[in-house]
Image (cartoon, rainbow, N blue to C red; front, side, top):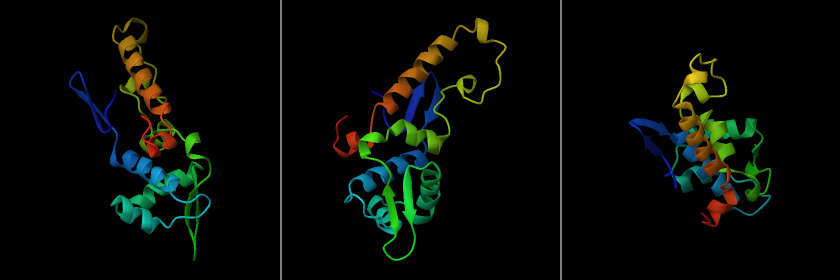
Length: 149
């Protein structure tokens, strides 16, 4: 099983940033609240011990991606737009991290690599990326709330 945070691989490091980790914690926190009621950002920031200002930047990404909805004013806050079982950790990390590609040539926006046809390491990197993808896309927020992993 892959650990949260740092994955050391042949001397290189792939990291899930605090932005990605905090986004997952934010989504778990929302999932644990009574359904349908907006949760003030300040409350989540306090419970999760995350700077409100930093959390705002993360939440803006989640709102823009239509994972959560925000309401301002008295009684405002954030709420999930789907059931916790319908959110995967992979989709949240994709929004906050941009990519989970292990090597640059496998990034969605990568330029054509002239070595692709004869690269002996490419199959290994593809397999590793597939493992990472499958791992994160098969864990839901509900799984984390219920500690089902």
